[in-house]
Length: 290
Length: 248
Image (cartoon, rainbow over all chains, first blue to last red; front, top):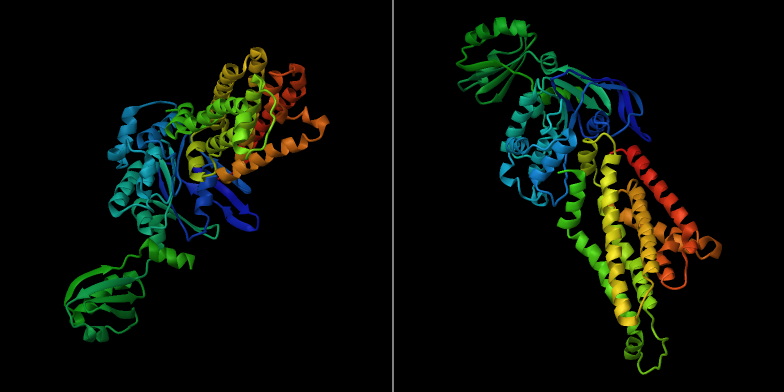
């Protein structure tokens, strides 16, 4: 769907994108993450045709693009319905009141459909921007921080909306909220100082960075238990996280799976629960960009 | 909703059309009135000083309208046009439009056409008001000269909107677009201080209505018309070219 080769963009002395090789599969939901100034917005701008790359090549197989900037703005004297209506007409050349109403409903602003957008909060503008981006049914959707101004309920609704696009449209969205990316994206790209330092399926990233660690919840007291589980040839570290929780780091997941339960039983632990500690995207992100 | 209706709504919902027409029509009525009663006004504020003013004629009413329209009317026109044409000044608005059309011309065309029509329409209404009141207060006027002069004044305003479009394609805000455009328009009369150049400049058309209701002829404005048409086309070409090159 999207393929870039050696895509670079500079602003004078500042290199915003440094030879980015991006591959986005058709129908996927691609999460673009990175620290502030990493080049996410610039990359989305280049993909949308709003900025010109300094060098490199880009191939996008699409007939229609929907773009949502991070802080959408519209003429303040238009109503929300008129904004979405205009977006549909400009993108598809049709007028369809039913489709407009449906999109406003999905974006959660049907109640404010006939209000002038000048009085909208930032969250409502973001919902309106999303409705405008999706109303014409684009096959490529570029979203820059689509949930940044939303309350928890709005965030939930927008994430569900994005997730429902999977398969029907290709979605590339940037976000600082890594939990959102982890929740809806199947592929992740990590940008740092304009370089794409990781790209691949989310699971590869998480599994590849997974530590052989278990979290064991036990009945207190745990001090004696921690002492009895001191490092062995396969246990590297035992840490009391709180009065009822122990984190055990082992040499490998295979050894932990085979030996941890007998070791806990031998140590006299009253085990309440036990599970491998799954790394979050945030953990991995911090490790990768640091 | 399409981009033509959008521009019409911009004028009507924001009441800009009222401001625009109001300014020109106000000066259309005020100009002849002040010309007719200039002597009485000067006497009233002259502190007893005897001031002799020539007997006003109908053409003086048009002169007074043109002088106000060329200043305050022009400023209002530039401001309102820039408000529509500087659509990239807020990049998020530019993104909304640009990612939905094949070519930036599709965005620019309705804005330039509607703004030109609004500005010219307001100027013509003001000119009609000035004509009517000048005739009522001071006697007859050559209607043919007035109509041709109004047409040439309209051509100048079309040039002004084209300049606004070109400047707005580069400006980062509406205010910058207004200031740069006003700077360009003010520079023209300064160039026109040189008598050989004045008749070639678009600003020469500002006074065409005044000249043509007196003893001027169409021939006096041909060079200016040619240059104005050429510069209007060049400004519109630049507006499209610069908008295409602009990155958001």
